[in-house]
Image (tube, rainbow, N blue to C red; front, side):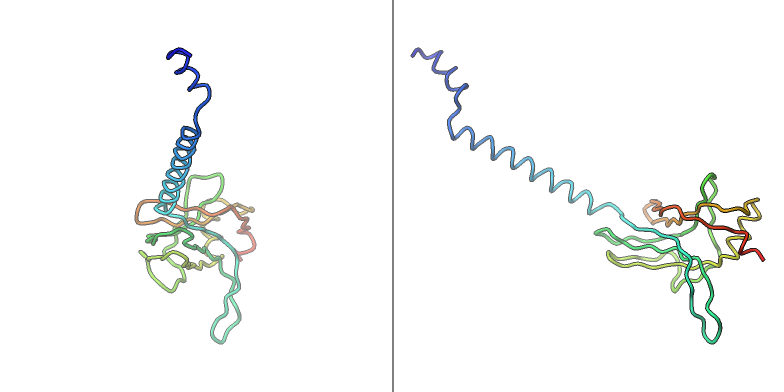
Length: 166
């Protein structure tokens, strides 16, 4: 076999060493990509936000219904919450409440795995929406702002202001 044909023959039938080298290179590329993505996800703020109606016990009185805007840090790094509020569907407006019931003030640090909630009077929300001409059922969702400028939003939920304005 002449030398030119030997060279072409080698490319058509790679040796086991060539196959091993190629497999190791592919494996290393996959591991590097997975490591990069894991580090990228670990540095991103990840909050879970939700809104619900809850009955809250009072000292010596009947329970009160409150709107809770809850948040949990489901990420891998601490996050500092700077404010919270509600968006309502169909509008770019947002509602930020100066009066709320919460065991802490803002800004508030939230470690990975920790959560907190803010409670707002449904009567206050109903009055705020009524002042904007909204008395029928609306969809609202909670949000929290973070110290890095991020805004984490929850899912839409229904709220009917008419039953709370009396």
